[in-house]
Length: 233
Image (cartoon, rainbow, N blue to C red; front, side, top):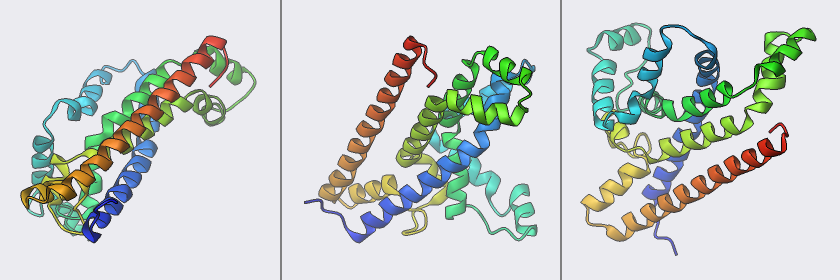
């Protein structure tokens, strides 16, 4: 029987809420941006891609540290937010959402960008000759053809947000019910020498990662099989 305390269950619920919200917001934000990056030849494409990809190579504590500085009440951005009546973001759930979005950004952006870049222009050109508006073409052709890209982006964004530690600890701290997610809860259990509880939560995380990766590979396999048969995914 799993040895989960009320604090563990609260951390699990908070983590799932955070990952769901971050994934939804990232899909909304990244879709138009990924479409533009996949189609543009702008000289700004390379630096923008580099900025988006930076969380992949930066230590999470570095990103968390600078977010803590930029979002602090004494910073310029913090004072602007304060003047607008927005509460301080560090050590709050809202701050955790902002930090997680930045940290998980490349995991959502890149699958979408790759899916959009692989689309053949002939489908869009044919729809345009039939009088379909750009919005109609996007929702009727681009989104169905990019379904596997959206699935990969959602799965990777959700899974990466669930597993993050350094950024959430730096910007969110360790507030039960507010910012203490599963990874921080595991850290607390280890510090308190509560290895059984840490083992239970860690095992859940490992099982979750395995299931997520299986789903991802199954999705990609299905897409490749459809591509071989010449069927639109």
